[in-house]
Length: 409
Image (cartoon, rainbow, N blue to C red; front, side):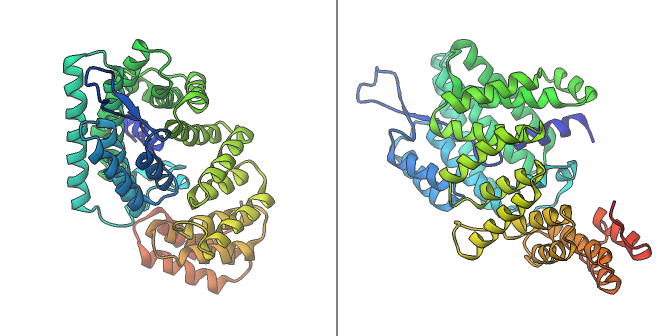
């Protein structure tokens, strides 16, 4: 993999569940500084972010558009709408489960659905609109920290869309680098502008985590790195950022803490988000993922089953049942409950939404049947894997297991 691809792979992770950005609105006195439009002082923005973090993107876009109509010269109001539009599309194409980003196969992962050309055009229009509004302020005052921050947020969102949806990695990287430079300039001008530490801290951690060749490539792009400084910046954003930005920081910090195996801190963060966003099945699934990664297999099984029950009882705004089902299969496999794991994998495979996860689940079910000495059933699963898509790693493994039965490592 090319170093810039690996860099953007993790850059995009930081934006998986949102990029909340406070906005401003003009005051009655046009000579006064603009007043930020935030969750704590704007009803439509507050409702929009409640929907946003509960995966109710249709409703969030509606509320953000109302705020945008009330503040047409506000680039951050445009950014809120842009975030809603982008993440609605990311959810539709199956790109929001953090488990999908655990390996570099993410870079070649096919979307669960084709990109909507109308969404592509809408994203382009909103990006251009927001950048024009920010630039108009910067033309008057190059040190306008709010305008710099708004432009950085727009560039970060563009990098997310370009990288994850369009798979245009190099263009996405350029946008990610530009976003970081804007937010670093904000902190130079105002070290107390804690919101800007979400992007800066994320990038510091990412570059600090790269292999040596990738770090060299990042340095050429003008990016330095430090994992510890990045985590500290994110902790500061969690503690002192505006509510919507603090939520973004929690999501990113939890992902990175998981990578660092700091499970206790990550679990505390995600458990709090479960309380804050009870209708978000991805947050609930992430808590179960963390429990399993932390080595608490029995507790993870309980957590996954709770998510599945919530899916069946319509406790969430929506649910992709294959996400907790596959996780449950992994947790049960770890506890050597092969029959239970096979059942969970079968449930994930039957979802029909994410073709790649469906194929992985079918393969995993076959592996379980081999361990259960049900060779005929295992062979049926391996044949199904190859029939789904014969040109994948899962298909290669299936062909191997058809010749030689799977054995537990």
